[in-house]
Image (cartoon, rainbow, N blue to C red; front, side):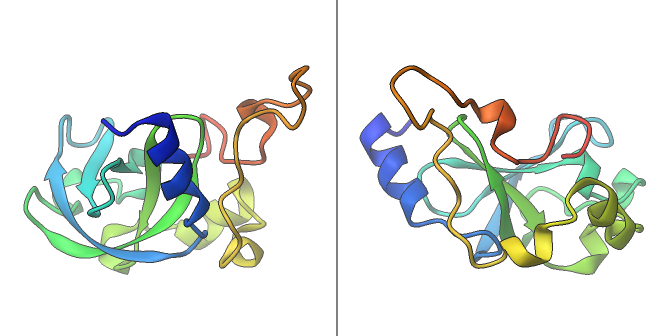
Length: 137
């Protein structure tokens, strides 16, 4: 586990759409949760089930090495990823982003925002940070 300072340093270097070669390290419940990916940063990478093909037989298996891009990072010490290979994306991905993340194309290349409140009083939260919702991945 990385320290708060290390996570802050890592996070500041992240950009939406940034691509990493990663290795699928765990597929805990195929078809139900998603996959965990090691991208070599010291923090976990995760691809949500909502971004993967409906049939879990089409998911990348443990040990698969592939390209993954940064999709989101919130207040958890985990980087949310999107597979680069269309074989590992949900079949209706274009429609999915139109419904749940219409700003995605313009987010690419932008820094991943800090989820902490903008003021000490806590006027903001990770919940209103503009990231994907619980039902939108």
